[in-house]
Image (cartoon, rainbow, N blue to C red; front, side, top):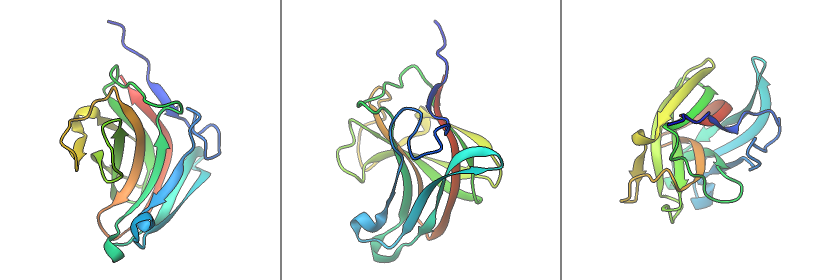
Length: 173
């Protein structure tokens, strides 16, 4: 069996809010539900590496608790990730724990997702998150990697500064 090449979702060569796959990154906070968190997402360069900088503050006030950088994985609908082991992100952070959330065709409401946690060290590093490590949140189905729709890099669940740079996102074989 032929091993596929990594599938680049975003390598930040655009230096805009648009990813390599043609979809647009956006910031989402708990204010959509009445929370008090805030954030902004800025294309920039850090240590000569083009990236997106998610910066803000997660607040638990008003039942809040998240700041997210979100991206559709395929501009025209679902992405079949069945040939891949997981998602790889190159990040620089503020020594905090972050989540990577996946939405699929099985996630019907906004609070449903598949989640994996990672530590964002204060230097550029590669994080590999195998699909098998993503746990369902508020749904009973296991992750079907043939039905990938969207990902989110998320600061969530506790009062914290959100300060993470994303240099690339890809699926790895």
